[in-house]
Image (cartoon, rainbow, N blue to C red):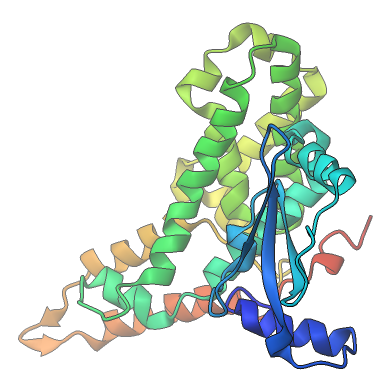
Length: 302
């Protein structure tokens, strides 16, 4: 099974096993082949212990299994042109369902990796050798996605295409809702509401009324009144089962409220009731990631 921690050497070993090659892994190596915008093919051997391979690969690149005794170029001119075409794909060419699925898989992996102790360390500002790394990554992703949405819209100068990008993001947010990915859904809505995007009045005026209504409905879920009651009602509905990707700022707000709204000590004694409430909330959050997220089941009702 290939994962983000699988090294280049382990990929070679698995490839040799998968293709039933009658040779030792030492005879092969993993190489990255990429193509520059000018069409120049670049090839390099990857270090055996290199991991996070999916994160490192460029859009205009591919990984190849190379026999160390052979010297020919791994990528033909035809393959190079295909790589260039693939690297120049725009957001509008991507399926909204596929984008929502990938956002959800990424968010869920980050959310699931958070250890319960990270919430405690972050809440009580405790020093940890792990430095709440997983929690911080999940906390940052909402800002990354928010500014990604704004960047995609603002870099487009054509008004009609810009409107189509806004429509595309509204559809992606809707699919994130279907995936129970409230974190990305909120990030997309936030990106569409950022001042530089909201000021594009002539672009918004071109948006079909159907999508204006959809966008308003998506925003209504995160209505901040009554402590985000609409969002909380959906999240706590018995019909909503794990896996769920909750809105991280709300998790942090609730834990902070429990911590700062209750004394840690009462009459000189440890306030165990406060600790029980915090532990209960963390367990509740943890249950949302108690079932693996399967892309094949995200849109099974379609």
